[in-house]
Image 1 (tube, rainbow, N blue to C red):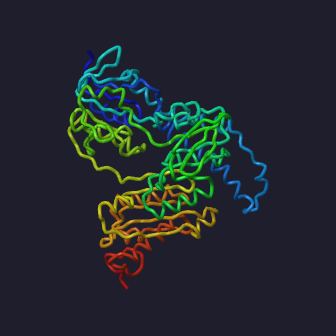
Image 2 (tube, helix red, strand yellow):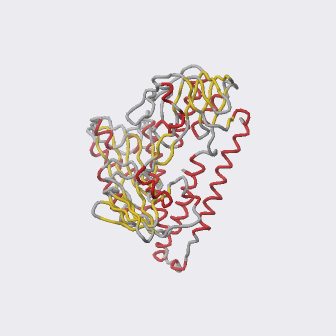
Image 3 (cartoon, rainbow, N blue to C red):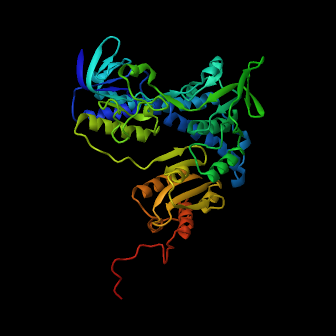
Amino acid sequence: MKQVEIAIIGAGSAGLTARAKIAKHTDNYVIIDGGTLGTTCARVGCMPSKVLIQAANDFHRRHKFQQEGIYGAENLQLNFKECFQHVRSLRDRFVKGVMSSHTYFEDKLIRSHARFVDEHTLDLGSEKIRAEKIIIATGTSPIIPDEWAEFHDQIITSDDLFELEEFPKSLAVIGLGVIGLELGQALNRLGIKCVAITRGTRLAGLSDPEIQNYCLEKLREEMEVSIDGVQKIEKLDSGTLKVTSGTQSFEVEKLFVSIGRSPNLEKLNLDSINVETDSKNVPIFDPMTFQLKSHPNIYLVGDVNNTRPVLHEATDEGGIAGVISSSEKECFQRRTPVYITFCDPNICVVGQGFQQLKEEKVDFITGSVSFEGQGRSIVKLKEQGLLHVYAERVSGKILGAELQAPDGEHLAHLLAWAISLKLTVKEALSLPFYHPVIEEGLRTALRDASKKLETKPSGLELFRCEDPPIR
């Protein structure tokens, strides 16, 4: 039996980052993965989806051309096959970049699936490995309800969307989380008639009722949306599907199912080591060190732990586990949460969201701005968006934000940095804002917030000099 200090199960973003940190301290490790290599992000997630979204938004922009005095938009055509060939071409480039890093540890990579025998032993089929510490970074897979299995040949998920060679004329997008909203809007803009079906008004992680309703109203200007969930799916004699949602029925060729992703844990045989799990059957772990509560020598990182399913968080978690497992025990502060949905305009949640603040009974105020009528938005012909910034009523410390805005991805980063630096509304307003830029909308929201603080600001929005100038 081969013995190592550390075994990493999964060569995705979290596992690869853990490996890089571990390699700085020891050469006695292995990384195990029997699936398709190249990371979820590069193969079927972040990167190919953004290529498709870019193409969809470029094509959709034609509706604004005549307003700018540009004619001929009615003659523009989209070749679906060539568009998806472009997506796959760039996807392959991103995957190649990931795979190139494997040359550094080819002798450590074992192409097998792992099952636990005990808390230190893994069965790889052809061999067993004993490890002092084990890092689980096996990622997630799209959820498809068992009762929909009979329609499997007409179901598309984000894992197989980018391989399409034949394209449906109509599609029911089921689920309006990040994936459903991004790709549903993109496919609709590319010319596939899409109807979006979700349950409730919580789009893309938003919890602020006013922003939820605003985004829903705007989405309905582009495509049909039902918030009553799916009650029934049936196959018609024509071969199409009839999807019933509330009192409405929709006839479509295929389903794009995006109702969430499930942690890849089933094949690990965790029952053999009596792991303590939560209500969703995910192992309970320390959120600071990612060690399992019942087995501290085992770590759970990345999407598989079902907490912050985005790439930069997965790499942070893998890095933390890599350092802690291979050296002295340390404690690391997590970054300010920031979530960006690349629909158009972007939807973002930063720091503490509306619902979290309410649940924690925080005394906060809300600064608001509409991007309808905002200078740079007018210039870009993108007058759509609403931003809410949350701050402590007494201190003015910025706590979080929820928003839809043109180029909202950049506003989200500015807000995340401000929150990380523990800036107050007054301090943020003392920073430079150029004209005309989208960021001026953030300044308007901060000014609105400043008027609602317990201590009202006075004077110019500038830092005072420590020593007055000599006259």
